[in-house]
Image (cartoon, rainbow, N blue to C red; front, side):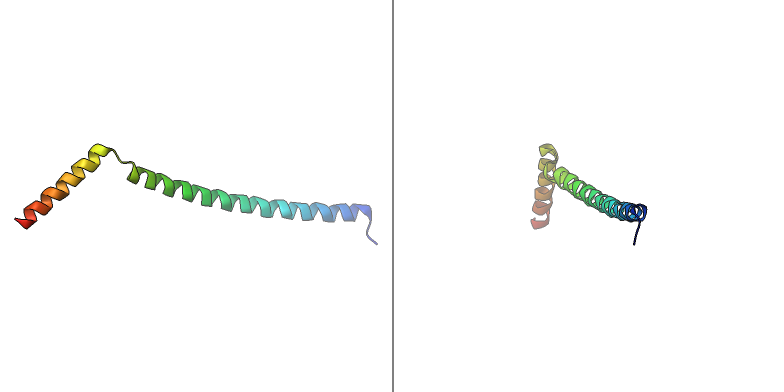
Length: 70
């Protein structure tokens, strides 16, 4: 028969193991969140590039296509 101290010690170790698992899971979620945020930032910059830069790029493409056709 286990004593009260042994039961409490066993419960303590179980809780420590659960805390460690949850801590590792939180770290994994934070890494995934950071990866998603980085990808979102890249896509945001690509989509919302300054309109002036987009116009210049389009003019260059059109000019290039016209030169090739001539």
